[in-house]
Length: 393
Image (tube, rainbow, N blue to C red; front, side, top):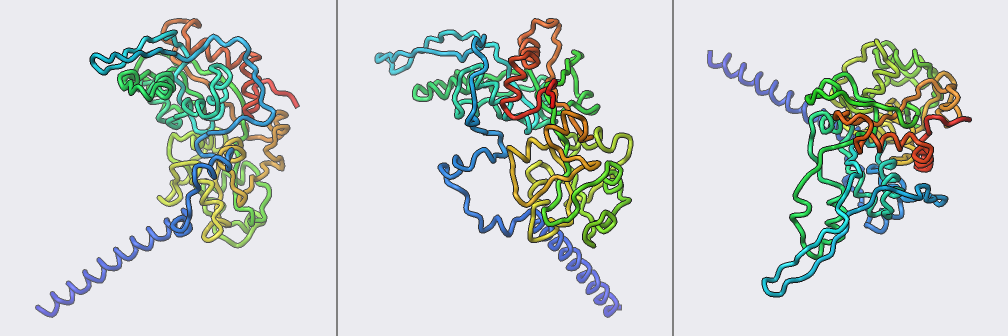
């Protein structure tokens, strides 16, 4: 009996060790897939070096293009200003707020829309690149809609810039308040995100510009073009090896984004439509667009087997990587000309979303959204590198 008990204990120990080993192997595999061994030896750039590498930025801090021009000549918006005097009797600063009227909307949204919000701040508020960066602290698609539909509070951009100007006076009280998000720029809300609306106020949703929804693979993968049906086959789990598509004999690694991210919503609505995607294992579900680019670009692991999806603007302007390439879809490359003409089939429209708020079309956020759709606003959209709604070849 003792011998049997010891044998059983020994077996359970072996099983436990095996399970721990499997967990460690999985962690190591995921780490390698995401490039951590390479990152351990990575030297982060200095502030000066980082400035020189722009415009490649995950955070949307894009400098003015060389041919940048001031389009808006008579902006109704301005930043608050103040004067301050020092009271020697009690050692306190007294601040007089000047021109505090401020109806520039608090904007939140998708990562891919950050450079557009930055351009709006340049044009309408007259701020420089560094100051304009204060206006692109976006939460990401899903969180932005939570903030809009559930009246989430974010720090006021006006107060942030104002505080930056008066930091030497330590006016902490000025930045102590928050402002409800007025406007979301980005991918249209999913049905799940529309269901977040607790205000019983119908949102107003208007398209503001276009972009190509793209599929990316490693540059060493010889496949150049897929049909929409082939893409669906990959993400339904019917097509499992690149050799079925004229590529290498490698099992396809189909990466997905997290639910209700902008690109996951785009994938379901533009590509899959009523078709069900396979449920990805944990390591194939990514939380950010930059991670999607990183795993597909990886030289040292499964990069050549991987496929992912994102938006063209993002990988051409915000997060470039020379080790990836965009696939043609139905034989058409995702160029401006093909997006505008319709030759490239996967075209998305970014939208502006505001709460109606019972003020018809006179509420400041609605006025701002209408301005984006004006000739002047669309010229700013184009200068920021996006495709205006009415663009022609």
